[in-house]
Picture 1 (cartoon, rainbow, N blue to C red):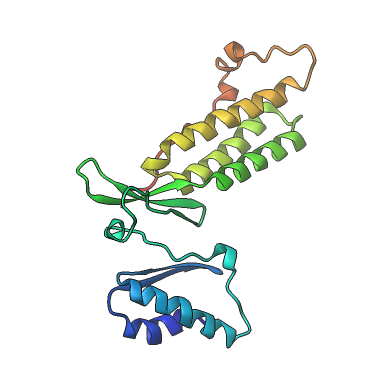
Picture 2: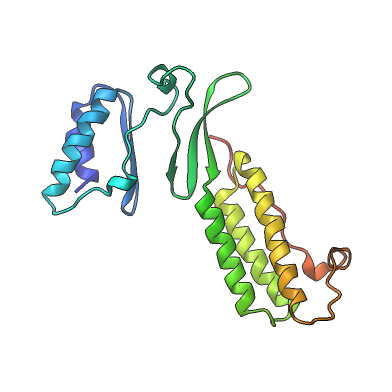
Length: 203
């Protein structure tokens, strides 16, 4: 419905470069020429209607983005951002003033991860501490593996400290006379969790 139609028909009539990136039913299409973008928005609805499908209007946006987008944006206004595959994509600049694509974890992705950690900790509060450590370490490693980009570093550290805080809170709930103070926990090797690390080169 989409991929072959875009590559074999629509893209051939474009005035500039055009690229489509899709994952399941989410996709982003980029155009060098704004006329191609507007034409795509119109023809896509016709194409989808042929298959009995409709666009999710609340998730569909046509916006300026990229190296030359500022030329079309009103003076003084920041370029819009968009969310895709767990990241918020931002038109940024390097120290030299060159365009760069900045990707940071979107707020919803962070909240969902922390909610999963909290739910797991509550359900497994009485596991052995070493077993809790191993499972939480695996969760964090998976998070770092996906979001391990340089612009995400601050967010990764925030997640690291919040997971520690949640774990300490559940450990203290085991007994009313706990000794799980930070001064004690930070000296225990079973409380050590993997710190954030960058796993992807800058593009």
